[in-house]
Length: 324
Image: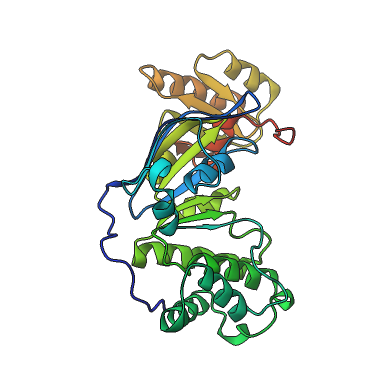
């Protein structure tokens, strides 16, 4: 895939925050949806935003894009205040929703032309942006076909392409790979990384697919019950070492009972978590003594949480959130 287009100047990732959120609060009918949210998004980075159903993700994105207003708190986007300069903020951003946001009875080109005109594009500039978006979406062979004849993957690629028409400095992506085949999913993820890397586009990416967040994100934020409960660089999060997980074969009831009596030990079906503290060596020795006494086979020892999904479930609880 070749992305060939000039882009905005001055967007190199220099570690400076592009978005700053301080003490943000929002309530609906007396129920707090965002509670004292503090978050910064580095210019030129990809932030993976995770949270269970009803955690506040959509409300946060809606406030940042100007769809709804905040109750209190301060927000700056590229140094701009949305209370006074919302139009300028919206002109440098683009939102790609989870729902397919185009006209199915029109062709891909007709959709791009229509949405481009809404951004005020016309003439040579509109044609250039359409060609760029068709190239990004790898839609050359079906650009003039009606969209309702497209496969799920083709529709998702068009959805993303429309979001790139205005050359956004900030791109908000909400579940951009829902319902697509593995090849289209991989292509979309590669496209997102390429746009970020080559165009320095700042991206906020929400998804329920933990492996996608691991693949594309530089930083990860977890929101639950309207609060940011974790925000750090991806590598720092995935290599956190407050615990060690010892993966084992089948454990008998006697071994489980002995392990449950040890302090700082959490026993699970697949293995044992050992908390890292001043008594870590002592606890590890005690665990392996139990394993040896009861013939428990050790498969693997993992420092940190191992996967983002394991950490996410630990932080947000395993309870279903359908009622939220």
